[in-house]
Image (tube, rainbow, N blue to C red; front, side, top):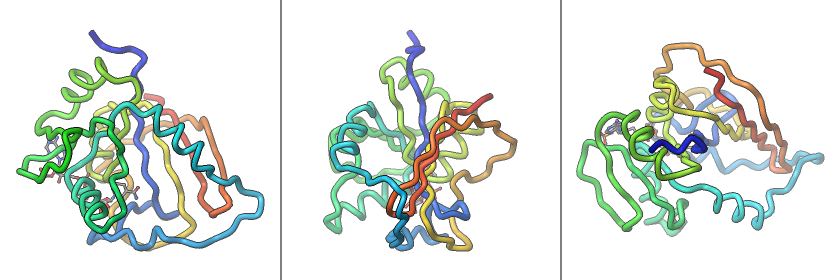
Length: 188
Ligand SMILES: NC(=O)c1ccc[n+]([C@@H]2O[C@H](COP(=O)([O-])OP(=O)(O)OC[C@H]3O[C@@H](n4cnc5c(N)ncnc54)[C@H](OP(=O)(O)O)[C@@H]3O)[C@@H](O)[C@H]2O)c1
């Protein structure tokens, strides 16, 4: 049975010119420093409470590999104890029980397996998987955190998007750090 209350969200942080990583995958540019006097502060309690509302994560293998590298460097695992579905056709290391690998049709995974089980389904990237998710009409909303930096080139927020997608703006919030978080509902 399909969970009609389920919601598929794509969320990533990107440069103002729409890149989520450099071409070689580096995200060093995310360490920005800015101050917007009228901005909000992202309180840790708020972030913690918000993360609790997410029921599962979906990501591409290259994003997973970045997450493993971060963890190996001591920055921790960003996805807590939530089920995390990693799209890959390769054999990758599985460092925790919450990680499940999937290879095959994305619509089958989202509509056939995730929507019946989970309410809040988060696509954590990267550009290839987010592009496919939108192209296939599987996303309900896009959350975009714009960082105060331009990097000129890199991996796009949505790779290989071959059609227009109409959006409806539902939230905008500017933060003291110079980040602007926007949320759009996918219209079609
Ligand atoms: N700024 C941010 O918020 C943010 C967020 C996320 C990621 N990133 C960055 O983005 C970069 C990764 O993005 P990306 O676009 O290069 O890659 P990606 O979307 O993370 O992963 C793409 C890979 O996933 C696998 N895949 C995708 N669909 C599949 C399917 N249906 N079945 C089986 N496998 C499938 C394929 O790899 P294989 O089959 O070869 O494994 C494909 O090459 C990293 O540098 C990461 O750090 C940034």
